[in-house]
Amino acid sequence: MRHQMHQLVDIFCDRTQHQSRGAPQQRLRLGEVEDGFNEIMLEAVDLHHHQNNDEESSPLLPEVRQELRSRVLRSSVLDLEEKEHPVVQKTEESFCDRALRLFRRLLYQLQLKWQAALAWLREKVAAGFQAFCDAVEAICSAFNSFCTSVAQVFRSAAQA
Image 1 (tube, rainbow, N blue to C red):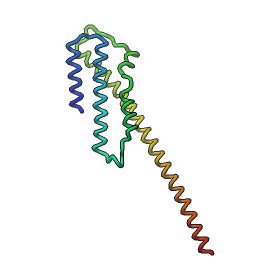
Image 2 (image 1 turned 45 degrees about the vertical axis):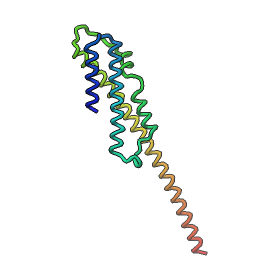
Image 3 (image 1 turned 90 degrees about the vertical axis):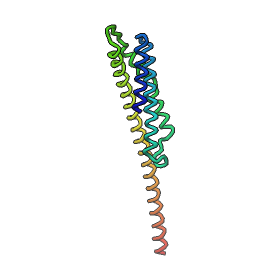
Image 4 (image 1 turned 45 degrees about the horizontal axis):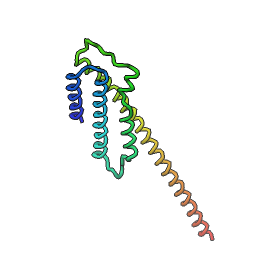
């Protein structure tokens, strides 16, 4: 995962260093890096789950996997960031300073996005477990009721 991310950074730096400083090009290149990072991290989640869990006892349901993907790949955080804080072009800013500033913003936004996705997933899991617990409690209650009625039948038969 780290190697793939480093490759994306290298590609971004190569393209950015050799092209103009226009904000639309930078947003486009940052969007490509953001999409690449998200895809790499989603693949890592799938791989980690597959390697560390038995699919039968702990399936990552396709609908949960798809919802996580859509939450992470939803509208670009960079576009949202641009509306709130337009890029300030600093004419004296060096390439390294500019790249660092852009990556700090990108990483901060990705961190926020993935933290929100993790919070959603935790809520989803908790709700799923609660529904499962409710189902088990209902079954136990029905079983207890059955046992009580069978015990009454045997007591009635024994008294007769």
